[in-house]
Image (cartoon, rainbow, N blue to C red; front, side, top):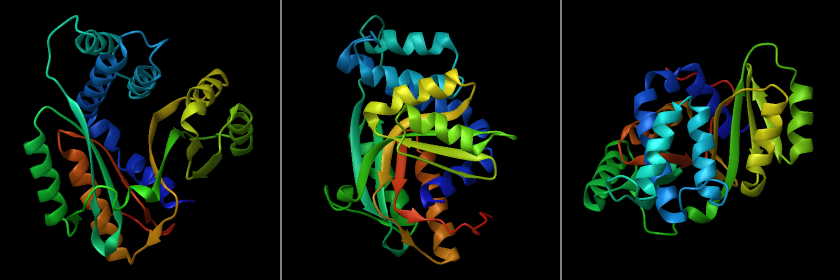
Length: 246
């Protein structure tokens, strides 16, 4: 199982989605608002907005929240003016970090990301220093007892998925961005319920660290994800199959 998949499993076991639901909603609302501002409020003609709404529904966001965010972005109601900024850097052991943010205050966000990286044993890098190590992919996570792995894989692959990996009842389906919606729709039609679904950055290759540095890196990921302006954090860390987060 890939390090990216293993980290997905760890996060779901820890119940991070439930514990931080309010913060997750805030981040997705920003994403919807920016998507609607950039491409209009009609998801049928705005694929970025459509993907953000899919992500919102996967997180069980109420319909009213989604509609308000769309209206705010399309100018029907007031709101902050957010811009996307991506920071590149390194974590413990030289692990590559890509931190995607949406912010209305560039100075605050840059300071928070740099400070958190430094305190966590990492450093902020220059533009382009690690981005070449990542590809944009659709990632769908499905979890539950009694899932037939072969049936799930067949459904996903036939719909256009690149790969399906699973461990301990948690399955991660990877797609090309253009195939993301079709694969998710096919999975839903087959009765599968996603616990998360998004288009994000996935490493081409990964690096392995000892357990101490691995845990330090994953804790740094959590601290960055806790920042209000941070949307996603991607690394090229390979988490060992026998690793158990404290």
